[in-house]
Image (cartoon, rainbow, N blue to C red; front, side, top):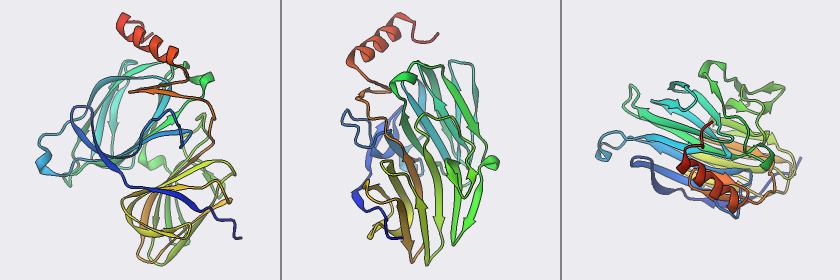
Length: 280
C-alpha cells in the first residue's frame, strides 16, 4: 500500500483578534477562492496569558449559510442563542451548530481548574440548497464521543467513521471526518480517505512525519488530492485534529459571519438584519 497523500502546503497560524478582543491562532479564513472547500475557517483559541487581562468572548452575533463546530479541550464556553437554547460546552465536549437561514448566538469562555481555556472552532460550508434551512444544534457530551485505541493511537471520533465505529455528529451536508488523534512515541497512523476529499491536519502537540515531511506544532497541514490514505509517523509523539470532507464545488461570497453563494444573497442578509427580519 503506497498510495499515501503528499503535502501541498504547511500553514503557520497567524494571530487574529475576534469578538470582544479574543486572541486566536487562525490557519484558515473564509475566502472567495475557497481553496479548502468545504472548510472555511479554523481557529485555535487559548486565553492562557495573564497579560491578556480579563476574559473576553463573543457577544451576541449573527451567522448564516455555515456550520460552526466548537471543540473544547480545557475550560468551558457558556452559550445562548436567538432560538432560546443555552448551555455550557466543557472539556471534551463538542457543539456542532448549523446556522442555516440565520441565528444570533453568544459564546462566552470560562477558565478551567488549570486556569486555562483551550479549544478549536471550525467552520464548514453549507451547499446552496441548504443555506436557508432551519437552524439546529448537535450538542455532543464528551462521554458520548467514541475513544478508539489502535496501534499506539488514541482517537476521539467526533464525526465520520473508523473501523465500523461512527462519531455522534451526523446528518452534516459535507459528510465530514473530524477526529482528535494522539500518537504515542514511535508510532504510525494510517487512515483511508476518499479520492477528491479535502484533508487537513492541525498539529497542536509534538511533531510527526506527514506525507514524508516533518511537521512541528503548531501548524496546519494541507494534503494534496493524490493518494487514498493519510500516513503519519512520529518518534516523539504528536497530537492533531484530522479534518476531511467532500467539496461542494460551488462559488462562495464570504462576508464576516455570513457565507453565501452570491453578492445579492449577502446584500439580502444585511437588509434583513437592518429591518429586523433576519430571525424568524
